Image 1 (tube, rainbow, N blue to C red):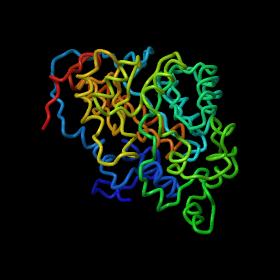
Image 2: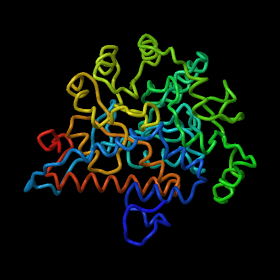
Image 3: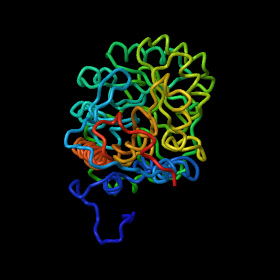
Length: 393
């Protein structure tokens, strides 16, 4: 996987990583290829995944100068919590497959930087452990299962663990067509067969960590289902067989009432759905297409952001989720009207590359980029960012 630059250097250590793309290359070197392509891949032709990041390049920043910006404030308030940066570490599944520290590493970094972060229903560390050990603002990414007992148990466990929010994912009633995973035969937990052995044997350090450390499982699910913990299954098959395609607005409203706390919908892409979310009392929406992993050909969150902000921005908090690779991407999202920006791959590559140290470096780089960008834009706080500072090419 050649680096995008033409100069003859290679990313071989954490110190070589200066941006998200660098972490991606180091992750490729560290992970068995089925695991890497699970993180990196998306649906069909992966056009939407590519557009998620490319969309930011079609809008330019227009800076102001001579603003006296030695002292700046990067903090925001989102979903009832004040955080140090306008960045949310989006919930992602299976993290102990990418590095043995998994969600624990991400939680430590989020707590240290006072950032929102989330764990998935399909996380590899339990709701209870995250709730007990990490004090920062945290959300449970909630998948709506056919098993109503599992649905109720997830909410109850999040409530008992004092999670600050639930984010219901609404764009996975069936799985997207993840062709890279089909080609690599990726399953969770990984199956070591004669056909797959070579792909894992090329990364022996990963293999030793996987085999010799604590058993991989999905502790939020294994009390109800064997799939994913003791019985290997592809994510596509899990979504298609375990999640409920009959989920509708009535179920969402019932779930919001059952939870009773801060409630976010993840996967809203239309202004009409954003209005419905506001109408039923949701606190926030994540404008998101699941990192391009579901409906290929759908709009990028940043492309759709202005329309949604104009429709509901005075009624509900709006988070731009996906495609973020730079601090300037976050500033553009905020200038367009988002309350915050979020992403998963931006820290997953770093987790895979170097565990907690990788996530710490990735977040610190983004923090520095946000701070530098604000000073160069001539703003002292993120609240000063607005559309007068943007131009579409």
